Amino acid sequence: MVDETWMMYAETFLEKQDQLFDEPVANTPEEALDFLEDCYAQVFDCVDDVRAYFEENGTDIAEMDDEELLDNAEVFEMPDGKYLLVEA
Image (cartoon, rainbow, N blue to C red):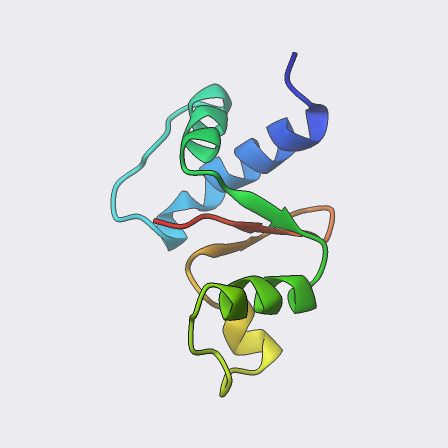
């Protein structure tokens, strides 16, 4: 059974996927959920957690403020105030 929260994330990603991809990678919420699972998408509670993730993975973000960091195409703001990170 699919968690309701993850289904909300999948639906939001489906609506916003063009911020990261030139062509749709999913056409239904179920396809979006499968895609997010396949690419090991992660959800972070706050911008500090997003920043820590990028730093731990060697991304040079030292000069970026929070707004610039969240403008990254891989970061999707979710309706519940969390952040979905999709590495393409």
